[in-house]
Length: 170
Image (cartoon, rainbow, N blue to C red; front, side):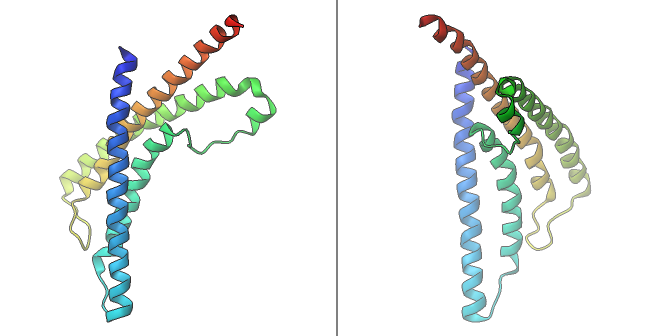
């Protein structure tokens, strides 16, 4: 039952991650391309394209964190694991636990920051995007990271349970 729920959440999150990253990156690339053509071809520049790119970088960084957890490509230092291979499993679970705490902090503090932006009604300078939308990415990303880290930990636990069974089958 728990595995089925995680599989459904995986499909939903994968769809959201892939399409948000694709659409936002394409929008930024098109805006930059048009801006370059206008700047060098017509001596005219779009002020909003650079702000759009900055907002896309923010969005893709935070949404990409969730995708990185799924792909197990988060930045980590593995020198200790290479020196003492027996520490791989405990250090992996410690790393996952720290990431889980970080994701919960992102939900909590991101929510507080988004709520603060809601009360101040601040907007971006050129495009006039309410900053609450940008700060709302933080708790959303925290929830996505939390779900992803639970999926990764569940897979690690299943792999650990499968190892003794495979050893007994020999």
